[in-house]
Amino acid sequence: MERVMMKGNEALAEGAIRAGCRFFFGYPITPQNEIPEYMARRMPEVNGVFIQAESEVSAINMVYGAGGAGGRALTSSSSPGISLKQEGISYLAGAQVPCVIVNVARGGPGLGGLTPSQSDYFQATKGGGHGDYHLIVYAPGTGQEMVDLIGLAFDKAEEYRNPVMILTDAIMGQMMEPVILPPIREVTTEKPWATTGKKGRAKPNLINSLGIIGEDLARINIELQEKYRKIETNEIRYEADGTGDADLIVVAYGTTSRVARSAINMLRAEGKKVGLLRPITLWPFPKQILADLAAQGKRFLVVEMSVGQLVEDVILAVNDRAKVDFFGKLNGTVPTVREVYNTINALLQKGGA
Amino acid sequence: MQKVFGYPRSLTPKRTHYCPGCTHGIIHRLIAEAIDDLGIQEQTVGIAPVGCAVLAYEYFDVDFQEAAHGRAPAVATGIKRVHPEAIVFSYQGDGDLASIGTAEIIHAAARGENITVIFINNTVYGMTGGQMAPTTLPGQKTTTSPYGRDITKVGYPIRVCEMLATLDGPAYIERVSVHDPKHIIKAGRAIRKAFEMQIAGKGFSLVEVLSTCPTNWGLTPVKALERLKEEMIPYYPLGVFRSTEEVAKE
Image (tube, rainbow over all chains, first blue to last red; front, side, top):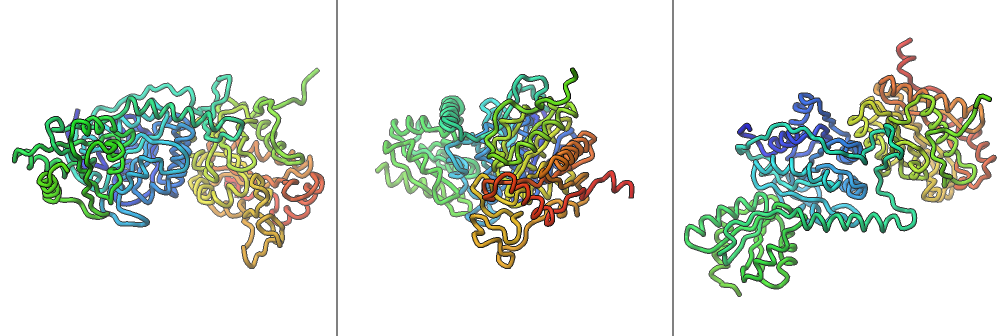
């Protein structure tokens, strides 16, 4: 195990290599350029493939081909580029092709800006492209999680034959932190469904999302939904920090969870009962723990770098059993520790009503 | 008795959904014959397009991936990079390749991606009901050019082979036709040649096959073949537009 100082984007890229990813297809867009640049250097060293595609659209379709052929394939982009990839992501979900997609998010809509944002939460967790589908979505909260979750993402993508997204942002991508890198892993996953050429198989393999014959489309969707229920049962991850005795629980992921944690630590030092619930999987969403905490009489504050997206899932999970407040900063601005501290304090003073 | 003619091993016994007189069936057979002759059935992966040939995977007895509209060359790139020893071909129509998929085909060709593209040009969007294609001839009536393609308003057809032949990446580009047995035999040879180039690792190969669409042209199968010969070939001349073997000779 090596401990090194790395930018989040580079930690993620090296984490992917260590997890056996050997196929990267990307396109330049800020603030994720460190990932394709790192891969362009690193892939030849491990006999991997790096292609700078002609567009985001082509990059995601290269991922479709490579993932469908059984390779561990990765693409990364930032918000406007992720919008371009949505067609391909819908096909990947429909054809059940395992792969990992990284969104180092920036502010939108449209061309938006280059500054960090969490305004792609809906796009990541509610589908994003056409049709009834879900990605598994991980939100790293540290440089170390950039490494750990990208490895987990490849394993889960193959376990469920489902595309997985890492949703992070410009701060997480650009910030340097010490990380421990695991050794390079040999991947031995069996993929009897992959298009390798028949190689003596009786039946050809097919990667496909078309369902126009008879009840095919209904069957495909029922199968997908059964898979999503299984993922919801088995794959929810979150961090609960000091939620047991808390009166107020802050819900935040990624960058804002770090800001919130600093504010919470200040308040707890003052004897105030405040906790943090940090979803690590944004989909499947940790609904049950929020419902349970609501039933215990806690109240919630959701902190986001958006006008309020995660907060909708919290309200749904809490289902009128508790009060949910929201503190959001618009695209391009990051909430300060003081702002979150003051917001929590104000809510505590107002009481539970 | 020696068997001199039979059903290609690389085709499934399924009956195709193609209209009477459509030439997709002939072209499928030519591809399957090339795969059989070259002994590559067990290592071949096809990519089906969006369009009439969307169900091509039902008819070929090889591994297949179904691509989004126009994206087949990108999908082929992904497959080939994972399995360089596999023989990867895409089968794409003119709407798919020459309209929505122009970026993908140009850049796959420019990279010299070691794949084979079979490009079907019938001057019309078939599956969606006969709309104007990038290859629709000047003056040709379609459902979205009901007064005939007006080049002053919608511009000119795209000659894909000529355009791609300007690039250094492609190893082999040829345009063929299937309007009579002599040309069908020539088309078969071109398709085989394209696969041979890939097997030899020469890089990108593309065969454009001039094809008919009797249904959307509103012609009988025989009249459709006549139109191909008399109207399409003058605009889309047959021949080899690029071959690295010939370039090497010069």
